[in-house]
Length: 171
Image (tube, rainbow, N blue to C red; front, top):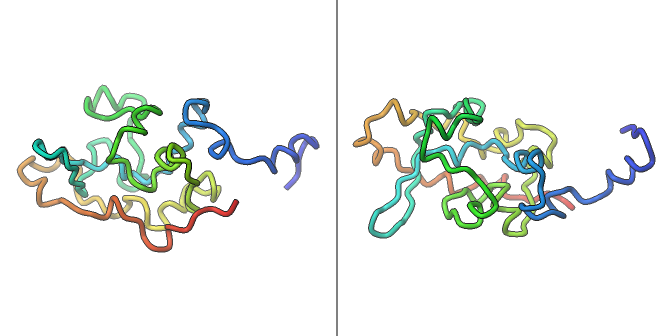
């Protein structure tokens, strides 16, 4: 790899921002790059009114691009989906339903990103190759299914990782 200056070369040896900054210290570009593009947070979740327990489904949000595993209208998502949660450092620390592989959650907990995270691998496709994303696992979007059928779509895989995906990045 070629560097323009000696300072650029020295900076390449520095620890990546997610290891040195808190969520609050990140700029908007760094913050957005923590999203690995798995789409797991865009799955419909059901919450038990009595126990607050969360049940995960394989139903995608109506804005989920099932192949790209990203929101089809990210800038306007909250206008179209009023209960879409806007992630903030405070929200990340309080939401129990964020996937265990979520970059925001990992950084908030002081843990490192997995090898397949695009910030580590340098490739947005590794999240899909590692089997972590929702690609190929979302049979229906929420606006295509009657509410009474949601219980038939409860799944456990969104809170689990494939065995090969669990390895952490090398420091």
